[in-house]
Length: 491
Image (cartoon, rainbow, N blue to C red):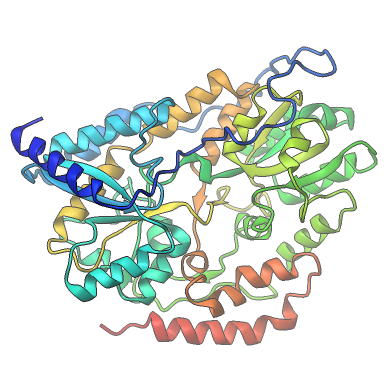
């Protein structure tokens, strides 16, 4: 550490010591919850045996991920910021700058930060702020002409709140910044764009594996019902893992009195959102130089709403108001469970012989599998009042470039060795981490309620009853008017 950086760290420590203590959240800290049988032997005495692989080959393009990340980092502008302290304001530092480095992902994140600090001669400090208060704090800083942070790392669903108060820089105006680089998630920037502005972007540096979801299944329940689980795995690379196929399997186990067909827990409220996006729909169509508009019609969403009606209509489905469904799944009481990836740690020693699949598609002819990430998935934004937009643009580019691919690889490798129970689950996990998708409605619906009312709130409301067309037209008209007013094509 050079002398300038040493002084910078000391100054930063003094500054942080004067701030109120906010603590921090450790990503994937699941100590407060157990999966019922965790830490016990298999209840029925049967040994858990590894199922032979179906031959599905791990997603390509990851073999030299670390070398590729290093090449991305090397391609960025060479800068010496003279040891300056670079503040990242965030409500959750657990993934970007973890203090607890027990997990391999946390250790790699710390190493990644050190690489970026060395290359740019900066000192990175994650400054924890209350999520609800960040907008007001930044607004006050802009009004008074004072410094707030160099960079924001915020939950995706809060991006609209910053935009509504005009506190974010249009990222496309930042010097030496290219949103088309492969280490940025393109859909995240498109989903946070409207008119001529882009307000946020994500990448492997911001999207923790815990924000992805998948379909967990109980191998024994399915096989007892005559379902070939290896064929389910094979259906994924074949492109035939669809919601209709999942429904046919749930119908095959519906006659069992001792288990549910399909359940959800922590993402139960968002379950219709996940089905909607995974079936290829968009709540809002947007992008650079576009006025956002509601991106679906009641007619085009008919197949999706039919699937949701069938799912919610199952007598033995637990998709609403079912507490601790993941524990029930761990105890062998449900055939399928839709949950975030962090639930794998709860299932490590569960008696259930489980596997994992991505969210299904609408049909075999559809494109890639799609996973709408959690609402609180984090993305980078640049505060409007930064005096030199080059610095945050280069630093956030470096963080994303230096993270690309290999941190996810380490996450998959760890779970292969310590958590999952068959080789095919490893391949499914790798595929899920390549399936992130976003939607404008999630980013801006919280700040502009009419957008939410015409999109995910309407779909959630109508999922069990399949009456989307009753309110769709009026709500779409209002939402489009609000988006035209706030995301127009004027400078």
